[in-house]
Image (tube, rainbow, N blue to C red; front, side):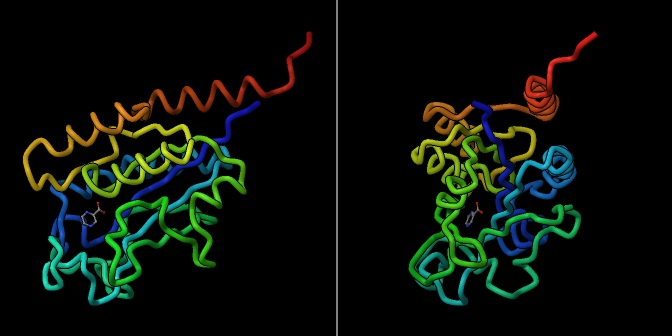
Length: 210
Ligand code: VGL
């Protein structure tokens, strides 16, 4: 049976980019890379999901309420917008997470669509079984999304050229990647993802005659 792949772009929001409220070092560097993936998936009519942190003003996630993070990605604020350079294709499915004042909202798999459908449920309904994941941040939302997707039984590939970490402690991103790989994720960069998708596409074309 053909595996059906989708792209999940995690939290490429202004607050996670340089100058933002919780800037990931070089976070904006993922944008041109992700744009190439977005184009690749879109050309193949493969579904694209984009998650966003979408917090209320008060959340236990924030330092002021006992959490560890500065206030960021508050619903409806400019910092919660996607990076303006990110070219999300028409039809991108928006996933919001961290919307209550008691939840950290790290995992996109715990996020919901605009209709309130949980991402994991939607992936099953759309018969998607393989997820390619890139975005921000390697050591939090990318990691938790990948680990959750694996737990839910999906095949997951981490796009190592299109992720960046917060690095609260130096080495956190590398540890996060190792944890994802140990849990069963694969890793890949653009050229190999492109050839994999191309090879699969061709394998499903009718055999040539003559
Ligand atoms: C994130 C830290 C706090 C993330 C979100 O998107 O990875 N990191 N909140």
